[in-house]
Figure 1 (tube, helix red, strand yellow):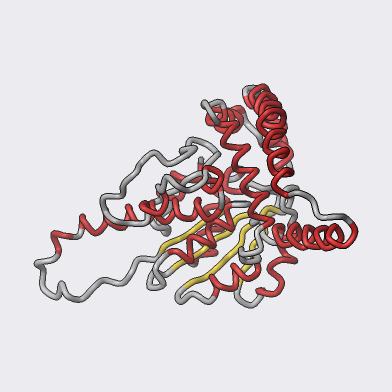
Figure 2: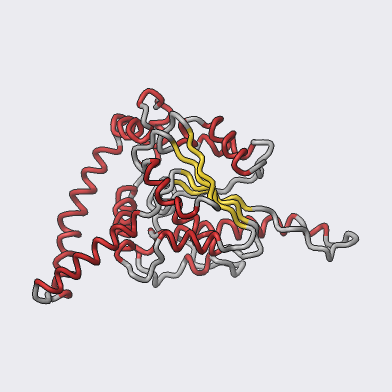
Length: 318
């Protein structure tokens, strides 16, 4: 991302930036390849071979990946500080450094889940950019109404037979057709230029470098399979009754000690419209700060990097 270097070099922001794509996007692994975490850290829960493939593409799995990256970075810092152990007053532990967690669009759910995985003693500054929150609850309520209607008006079906038929159609028809379409589309610059033009709200702002940056990871082998599995995982998670509603998830994060949540979004965002964001965070207007960036769309950190970094510094009071 263009903002990565700018964030790392910003004089008033933490100078270490660690980021990952959601599994199924970019160059993030389609499935973890490591089988062992020598440090005994959270990677051990990420690399279990008995986890179903689709589960690697959920927000929980992506949060576990981010937690593992944070854990490895923390170990690196600790090893660099080992030489200070013999200094006077070494028993006085330094304060925990503030961790800035950022999530974009659907990654907002991942970021909130990652905040819950981190130790409560770690101060957290959470920044959600164009967060796609509150959408799962609507789908879940709609599905509950459909299930209630179906239970009262239709005879009970053989769910096992239905699952088998659905799996057969998915493997033999849906996936091959979707894979073919995606392969044909992602290799064409016009596909990305048109998509970015819509997402950013201003096609004139999209450059050839922007198009190439999105196009390049997408032509990697297996990209379309990862995207299909990611999409399926999101659909399945919206049907699960044991997952917290997004409002409940946010409330849990806000209850953490030394934790703040701020929101940045673009005025012209056509993907997650400002009205949707404002409506979702309205119950939290006393604890969550919302900042609207004029003239920008769904990816403000890519559309205008200097302006985004400046806003971020102000939001974090750095």
